[in-house]
Length: 302
Image (cartoon, rainbow, N blue to C red; front, side):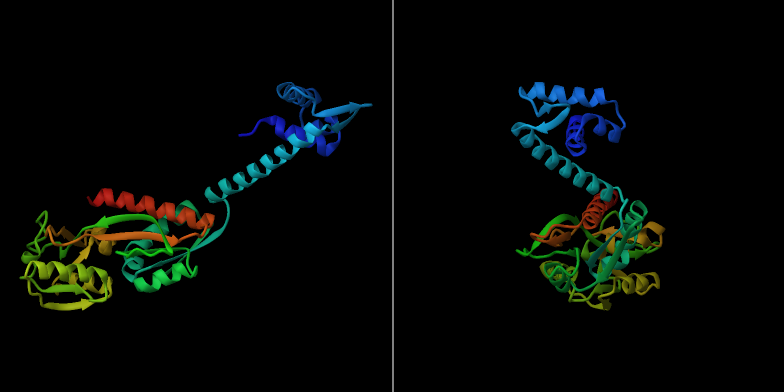
């Protein structure tokens, strides 16, 4: 990225002569001398006083050398960051996510990331949404992943995508062949619902209320795994989004049919970090990997 002359000039000054610089650089002395002469011609003034076969920087040479060494340092730092981004260095990333995301989405994300960057270690902790926000703001974790966060001045959003809520069904359920459903079509079947402490439940409750639907669930839980397992056992149908049962859908173990009610808002999945904090190279890599994976999944599921 940088002209050879920068390195040549720096080494001539360090070694004290063109011959010694050429030996160190493993090039011909005439090549080093030609680069220096061309630079002097371009600048219109000499960089060295040549006295008795000795080289001494002129005032212009001193100024140019300062710039050259600053540029070389920046170049070395850039090369180091490039090496980091290629996964040639070790690193550690901590991601805080809700238990549902930790159990359904993150296993595949971590696997893909580790396959691309085997030197990186990933630590995932599952927390309630408020605790995730607090951990990010306190710099206890690098990245947070959660649904439907309100605006927070201490957070910086890195990526966001909207996910439609739907019915999670046994693959042979009578409703499984539909392309979409209404909530009113689901309430005639035993319902397994997210617990009231989860943001998805507040979206469902609002849609139930606005559609004047009375609901009686057979089970509710904060555990997405418990809900989809109950579905597989034939206890009823669950109302979740596709990311909550990602692996089960990919295996063909369950069906997902989106809900089309106009009053039912989509869930917004957000990836975020602490505002004002510079992410480590490892965290930048992980954030980019998550953003790419979410975009790919969104395109597949829509």
